[in-house]
Length: 160
Image (cartoon, rainbow, N blue to C red; front, side):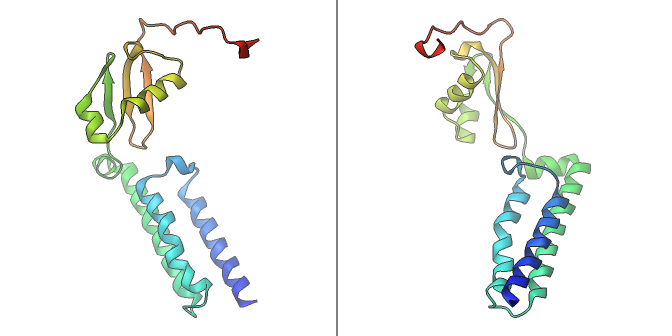
């Protein structure tokens, strides 16, 4: 029964701390939040499998970790240079229908990845794109050129 109680206590602590971190999807986690999720099992597992008889060590460790994440996110919110240093800045990958190869190489983004994102927004040719921006969260934002309307789609037997 001791193991069940330990798991419940750790679960409640982690859920409360995650709630304090805010409402974000996993794809929107900052690097600090992602590292936190990776470190939590290392901190709490000894208490759960009884390698460490003290549940207190796990609770103190997890609480300290979540407190650090909260304080860093608070500091990043108020100190913009710190936010840029930790989260990074957007990177322009396409400008006015032309690949910026140096930026693409530095960010390790292939033309195929850009074309894939273009297709998701209904663009088929690179000259239809004003900008493609790699956001700090790793997502690609595709901004179409205002003078290039979406090309008409070819008829498909699936449309009927």
